[in-house]
Image (tube, rainbow, N blue to C red; front, side, top):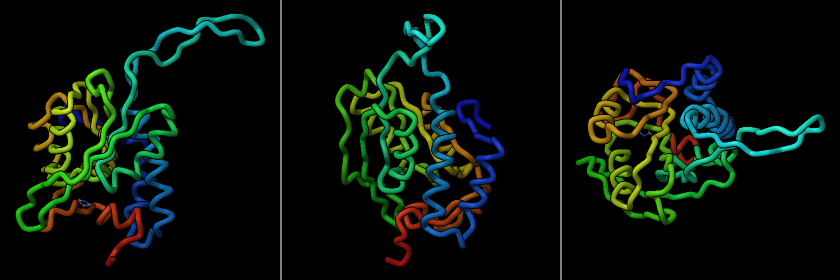
Length: 212
Ligand code: URA
């Protein structure tokens, strides 16, 4: 494993991931499990947030108590499946700003085109966590990070649910400065660039749009 990549191997995460992967998992189950695992992924991605001190009074005495200090946070979803990780991240940090990036991929050439980009100002002063459940070829994630770097972001993390080894390699080569947090690095990509064994199309499973 690359040192910049963290696989969250907690038994609860691995158990929930197994339930999500099952093809018979309903849309409601899939959504709920992604939300639950998202909390653990966010917990890990934000593990080193700096702390300051705040004076508070408990019913017993006063104390200098730890509070999150430092940069403001931005959560940036790569549409559309990235939106499935926004809920749990906002449960953890309700005050975070939100960005969204829309990227479409040509199925033949796998070339990535940007169709939507809306992010808060001052990305350079923020900690920016980019969310996309599936790191497959890495093309979209690499482009999304490049777009936010071009918009001024410097401190960036990438959170995904599943990754392919090919995607991890491409991503860490393109953006060695961006830590990755994932629940699993699967076996490989298939000829259609789906992660194997994976869980199928994350967007379709999350939104219930298979065959639409
Ligand atoms: N995107 C998905 O939703 N699933 C994959 O397996 C690969 C990319």
